[in-house]
Image 1: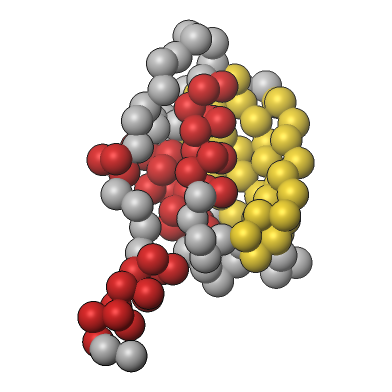
Image 2: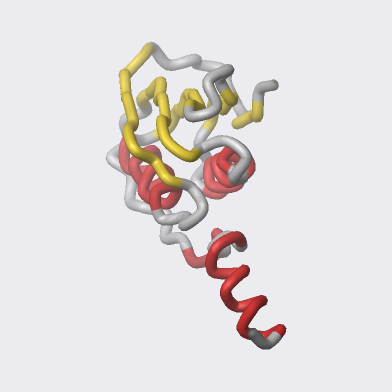
Length: 120
C-alpha cells in the first residue's frame, strides 16, 4: 500500500469532518435539556473530543463524561431540539464511533449554563 493510500484510508477512519461543513439547523426557539447515555464503541475513539467540537459549533451547553463501563458515555445537552438532534446525527456519522444504543431523557434546563465541558 502506498503512503498516499495509507493516509487516505487512515483519514477516512480517524480524521473528523470539518464543522464548517455542518449546517446549523433552523431553530424552533424552544430550549430543552437532555440526558443521553451512549452505548457501544464510544471510549478510546475520540468521542468526548468530537462531542465538545460539535457542541461548540452548534452552540449547545452541557457536558460529556466516560463511565466506568468502557462501552458507555454519558452526556447532558442543552439547546434547541434541532441542534441536539444534529449533534447526535453527526456523532453517528463518525466511522470510528459505533453507537449501538442511545437512551435519551428530557430533564430540567440549567438557566445560567454557558459552556459545554468534558468532565473527568
